[in-house]
Length: 217
Image 1: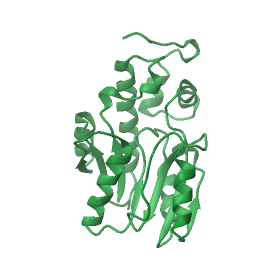
Image 2 (image 1 turned 90 degrees about the horizontal axis):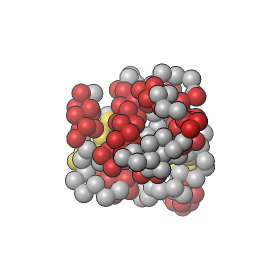
Image 3 (image 1 turned 60 degrees about the horizontal axis):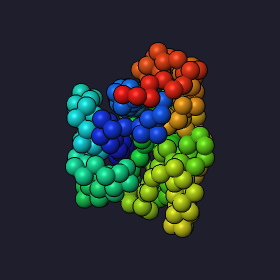
Image 4 (image 1 turned 60 degrees about the vertical axis):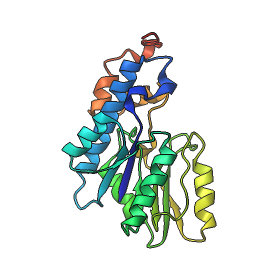
């Protein structure tokens, strides 16, 4: 099952608070999750997908795309959301999980297919963020092979945990998945990359060369 955790977008992207006001940050976060869900929805023969969230915008969007919704009523963290969703998958006998975040708007179906193709019957696949510190995709089989703990420096701990299982672990570098949007430089890369996603069109409306954009609400 594909698991996509999404926190409350009304308070999203606090690391961009110095350059975007909350209204703009929420608009960006909504555009990004829309891009991610649209890409996953366009993947033929994909695994079942579920969005783990309590955010009303995302719930409505997930329903439009006919994704399953796993309520995250606590809305504490991506780590807690995935722990809850993993337990849900185990209770349903789901054998593997692919976790991706909602802020990778340049994700490609071909990249998701590469992850599935690289996945062992028992083992894992990890995709690091562009900076090599974060983790932007994790395939685990079985579903709870090792716990996930997300954050700015999650990749090395995830790799260590995966290797400790004694099962195969593959690392893939996938540029679309690697670009998560947390900093002004990420926004610039998003805007300058080829493509016409919702997030890119939004970012190109802002004068990214003249930060701060809208530091005051």
